[in-house]
Amino acid sequence: MDQIPEGFEPHVRKSPVTDPWEPLYARKAEDRLVLATRIREAHCNSRSMPHGGFLAALADNAMGLSLGVNLAAARQAAGGLVTVSLALDYLGSAKLGQWLEFDTDFVKLGRSICFAEATVRADGVPVARARATFKLLEAKAA
Image (tube, rainbow, N blue to C red):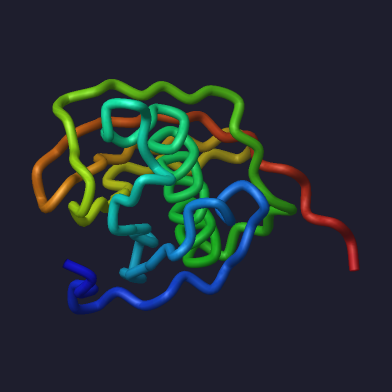
């Protein structure tokens, strides 16, 4: 049950938002960063299903990190990203012990606004779909 799928490594970027949900794992691809974790009690509501706030926060994080990968590849300087809109639709349910992946599969870069979509999968089965709009912050002059 604690086995980590091939290609995933411990996620090195730490944040006060995601600290309660550690350990997190990441798999870097050319155009995205897939975040993942094994569902534990700390992630769940009273029905032992992943809490909506947990799903939304990690989907938001995965989409923002994937946009960062795309911006770097496009050599587009940014001082960071701020989420201005986030929606999460539930497609199914997940259970304790399942492997949960947050995979960004659509990204559109703009000069000041970026868009992303992600699918949340539990053991490969879609359980949620997220969409977000991000504002690019200006890069600070050196």
